[in-house]
Length: 519
Ligand code: ME8
Image 1 (cartoon, rainbow, N blue to C red):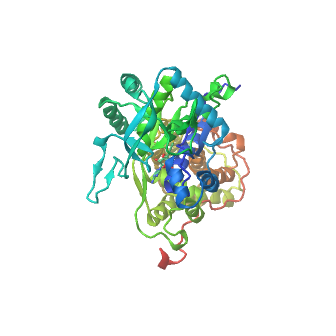
Image 2: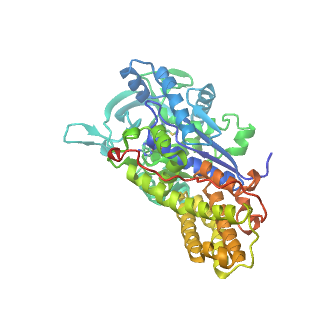
Image 3: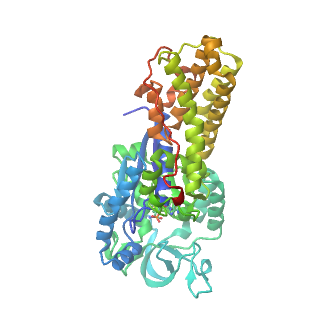
């Protein structure tokens, strides 16, 4: 057993009722960056993702396509696995809710809630949104001009009346409010916490947690005429993934409770009201934090022809490059808020931030080292005030990034890193090492050393967001594989003079329109 601290992080599990879309890829990329950051920072990370395969939405989509729900899931799950690999995710596990381990966990948590006296049989009559897989109170619905009644997320609702098991959610109002009061970090960002608190303060009704009108789900223990409401089984995936109900298993003891559930803003209520109530009832410790990201929208303009209108995330990464797409989403969209993407915005980031700012800084300093210093890391002379200043800024990045990542403010961390890149470009231009080459070669060597050292720290910190490109930069700087963790940041990990470097190569090509007419 390791003495490193542990970190358990999850994405939502997607409905495989269609192919994965950009929203799924965005959540995967962001969660992956958070997981990689923690690994590089010395944590023993467990990163879980997967698919949510039960429920009426799957049944209805399958019926429209002439398939069973199982066939639909089996057809689409490989597309999700492919997307996960294509965006470079470093997940440790991929759970399908149709797996036997998950049936066992769901039935066990049901039985624990039942033993606590929180489940009873009654009949349900009310509004249900198939698209959201959610029950809504009448007051949460409105009839639009088209005569269609819709729920709070704008999806159509239908009247449902059937025998159903209920969970005594009403009994948890006070305990939930105390949870939010005592743990202000339980829900992020803060505006989501405020919404949840006012929803819970408004009063909670008992929740219908089984269905009898279809059988695509996990049977209710002791009454297989009922299948569990899909959200009871879906949320349980987070404990299945670490070995529940075997609470003595090494993985459960090591990793539960989860440190962070990353989800989208449309499913906050399930994760911050229902889920903690289920866990309290079952006597299972609660996750530490739930963070809701915003939604991504295509700004509507045409993307380049080869990407189509880019609903397919695999086409997007094939076209622009996986590191480029990861950087774009995480830098452009403040994590937690909604954002837009467009061909123009992606190309702007690729050419400005990556090719010009970081790419040129690395390329110019490394090619001068190759040409003038025998391709070896130079030995610096005494540091000037300007050298010391830019090195101090680079040394300060770790603490700034850590603080930002701990709040899931990925965009803020990238902002800090790129402001040091901008400063280093100003430093390089101001020092004019190409002039020093003739007038003061020793000073040139110091300037190139300082610049390469800044590129080293920036590259180490870029790894969570751009794992492949950052690795290439670290290769060019001659940094061994075991010298790339965050332990190497700061003055303790300085470039070693005399290290022979490989021939420099461009890492961030400019994006050039293949055909202006398509753009
Ligand atoms: O909600 N932009 O599955 P899902 C950003 N199975 N994120 C988006 C998005 C968009 N345009 N569209 C969806 C479910 N998402 C449930 C989850 S968890 C126990 C069960 C996000 O396939 C969405 O908010 O509809 C959610 O976090 C994830 O993608 C999966 O959505």
